[in-house]
Length: 159
Image 1: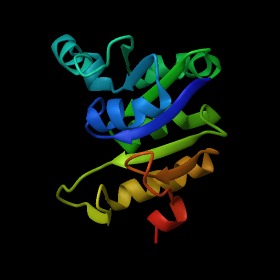
Image 2 (image 1 turned 90 degrees about the vertical axis):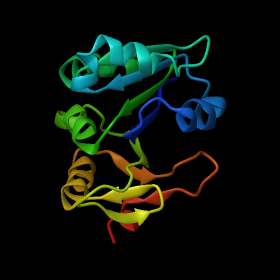
Image 3 (image 1 turned 180 degrees about the vertical axis):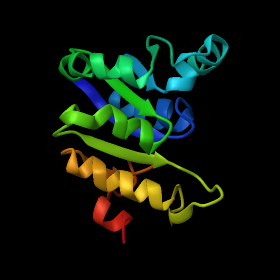
């Protein structure tokens, strides 16, 4: 099994991830890769409250996750790995660490400098560049807010 979902979602662990995706994928572990969150115990504890019973939350910096991602990919567990932004995901993917995987863009919402691509996906020029860089790292990038929604390809997103 291993990592069953690699997702960029600025809300990290929340209902859409734990109920929408979690009901379908049944992960036993939610891994949040975020440098700031990994360093804040009270924020980690608060975020972990959203994890369903029977699952655990793991928080890691990008550096820690880069050392562990190969094991997570090969694990017997079902793992959902989340980052808050494309920068964290790209830094994790560098040097081919995520080659052959698919990254789901699930929730980057309206903010200054971002333009709407989909109702749940607003991107900056820098975000678009990071999507292209992820593809150069051998990662397939798609967008889908929920597992029942249509999959949008990177080509659709970057038009």
